Length: 315
Ligand SMILES: [Zn+2]
Image (tube, rainbow, N blue to C red):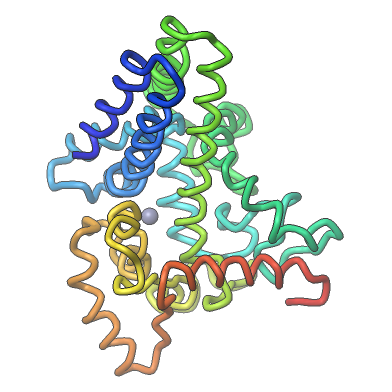
C-alpha cells in the first residue's frame, strides 16, 4: 500500500500535474508516503525485522538509500550506536546536535541555546538533506558524530552508497527536471524533503529527548548497568489511545519505542501485543514505564525539554 502511494503520487506529481493546484495534493500524498516508508518499511528492514527472509530485509533496507540516506551508515548509527548506547552523552549521535542545540544536561551550554526551543523545529526539517550529504564526509572521516566506525566500508558498501545517492538524485531531481523547469523542481524537492525531515525527526525525538526519560553520562557502563533497564529508563512510548489512527499508522510503530528498544528484531505490528506484558513486568518490579498520554503531550514534552536545556543552570 505504501509502495503504491509513493508510486502513484510521484507519477501524478511529475507526469500528470501541470499547475500548482494539481501538484500540491500529489506532493502532500508523496510526503505522507515517504514518511511511512521511513518509519514502517526502512526502519524495520534495516533492523532485519520486516519479514523472515534475509533477502527481503536486505532489499527493503535499500529504501533508506532511495530516500537519500545510506542504509550502511544508517545501520551503524541507528542499530549500533543509538540502540547500543541510547541517550549516553558523548556516544549516542541522536542526542548530539552541537553546536545547534543542547539536548542533554551533561552537554555544555551556549548562549544561543536560549532560543533552541524555537529554531530547532525548522532545523529538524534538514534531517534528510543532512543525511544525503553527511554520508560522503563519513566515508572519508570514517566517523559518525564523535564515534569512529568499528570497521570501514567494504568496496560493495561504497558502491551501494554511491548507487543509492545516484538513484535518489535521479528520481527526485533529474527525471522531474526533464519535464519541468529546474527551479520548480528544486522548490518542490526542498519543500518535500524539509517536511519529511521535520516529521521523521519529531517522531524519533519524542521517544528519547523529553522530560520523562533519563540520560547517562559517558562514564556510565557502555550499555548501562543493565541493558533492558537502561532502555526502559531512556525511552518513552506514546500511548496508542492518545494518537489518532492516521498518525499512529504514519508512526509505523515508533509510538512503541519501548518495545522496539527491548526487541528491535521484532516487526512493529507486534509491539501492541507485547506492550501489556512489558508494562505488567515493569509494574511488578517497580520499574518506571514512560508513556506520553497523547501525541500532543509527547510533542509538548519534547518542546519543554528543549526549553529547559536552553537555560544555563539546568542540568
Ligand atoms: Zn530502531
